[in-house]
Every structure is written in structure tokens, then in C-alpha cells.
Image (cartoon, rainbow, N blue to C red; front, side, top):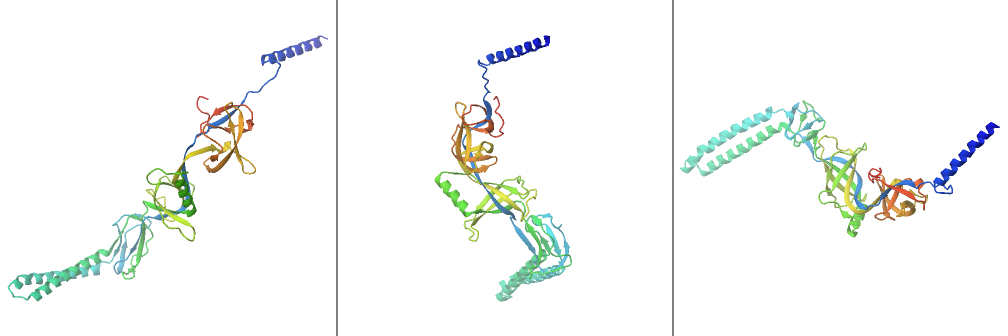
Length: 374
């Protein structure tokens, strides 16, 4: 009996406490959830670079094939295969002995011819020697001089030097090999590696589309100066040095409909090798009034239609159909449906039903984190 009275007393206290709590929340006991918090960005049109990603390959800026310029046996190879050589560096030594002998003989002939011409010179003035004989002696001296110069040049060709600075490939002849001037025996190939070319192609249709959009004012020309080119390597990494566009071909390849472009990149580390594949990113124009919205804030329906959730001036949620274009990083380009100042929900869409009241939390568009002070 006593226990029943105690239990009844406890129930009365609980009911009284619930009633008091109900009165304290605004009467009648009706409990209302607070508005849900959602992350929003405020639409701000911005300048967007129009960048084309175009595949291509690395090509050396210069290629020099080193050939024999005299006949003879190779005495020595002076370079390390695959190394960097400089302009004028000695690569091979061809046996100079026969060419040294030819030069010595030519010098002797020159000395004799010059002495005869010098001896005739005063004699022709007193008619002791005919003018014809003197002229023949002078001509013979000139011919002897030319022969000596040719012999000296051929002797110089026995020392084979690099015509350009670059990376040299494998030796194409060995020590003891007989090389020939008439056959222009290949001895080595040197490729200039720094700077180096990147040759790539672009569809002529894309070039025409870009030109039309620029003419219509939809796009503007990129900043003045040389167009910026960046390079993505075969492993997906970005090459650390920017390149510059040298030219765009003025003709279209009829077999592919492509236009060839060439960019130049510095290559101080030697990472770029001839024949290497890459993707060039070329900034060709800018879109001055572009609206970007994070992809997390865009809902794409089964039929491909896209929409966003807006927060109105009264903090209620409204659905808005939009037309999206290309993806830029983690954003969509919104071509129509939004204007400057619109507040788009980018996080918390599951809590934002059309017509519901929400608490908007502005976020940094670059980091998607709440703005300081919120």
C-alpha cells in the first residue's frame, strides 16, 4: 500500500515536470526544430582562362649528324656515349699523318713559288724578265698558297669536333674503322636538348570555333605577350617549367584535319627526351563572365537536366534549373540559370527541401570551408 502511494507520487512529479517544460517552450507543448544549417556560396562571375589540352611529342631543337670529312682510319674516340657535349668539343681523331705530309709538301711548294715571284718582281721593272714570266710566277705562288690552305683544312678535319652543344648518342664507328669523305661516313648524332621543342596538334574545327567566339565577343584574347603553355608528362605529373608558343602552322593536314603547333620549353635538368609523349595545356583565350559552381551543389537528373538549390532573401529554399557546360576542376561551368548574388547550397542538400527555412553558412569558394567569423 505504501509502495503504491510512492509510485503515484513519482508519476505526478513527472507529469508536472513535462507540463512545465511544455509551458516554457511557448505554450501548448508544440516543439519546433530549429532551421537546418547549410553551406552556401554567393555567385560571383569571374574570368576563366580557356585552356586546350593537346597531345604531342618532344622534339630536339637541333639535330646534327657528324660525318667524316676526310678519308682515313679512326685512331681514337674522345667522347662518352650518351653524354652532353659542347660546340667545338673533340669527338674523334682520324689518322692525320698523310694530311700532315700533304700540308708540309704544300708549304714547301708555296715557299719555292713565292721566292721565284719575289725574284722576278724587280727584274720585270728593268725588262730583265718578261712580264708574262713574272705573271706566271705570281699565279703559281697564289695556287701554291691555295693548295697549302686546302691541305691545312683537311688536316683540321682529322680532328672531328661537335658542331653544336647537345647530347650525343652512341658511337657509330669504332677505333680502327676506315671512314670516307665520299661516302660521308656517319660517326655520331648530336641532339640539342636545352631548350627543346614540343610539337602538338589541334583540330582545325576547334581553331575555327575559337576564332568565331573571339570575333563575336563571347571570348577575349588572352593576356598580351606569348601564350602560356604548360606540359603534363606521361606519368601524369606537371613539368615544372612553363613553355612559350613559337608558332601555329598556317596549313591544315588534309589527312587528319589537324593544325600543328610548336612550343619551346627549357630543359635544364634533361627530363624531356626526344620522342617523349606529353599533353600541352595552351591558354588561348579568356571567358570574362563565367559562373562556376562546385559539383557538390549541382543535382543532375536521370534525363540529364541539372538544378541547384538556392537560398532566397527570406532564407527559404528554392529549386532552380540550370544549364551546365564543361567541368573545371571540381566545379561546373553554369551557362544559364544563375546570376550574380544568387546563394547556392553546396553542402547539406539532404536537409534543404524546397520551401523549407534554413540557416545559410557562407563558405570560402576556394577551400569549401566556412568563412571566418561565421
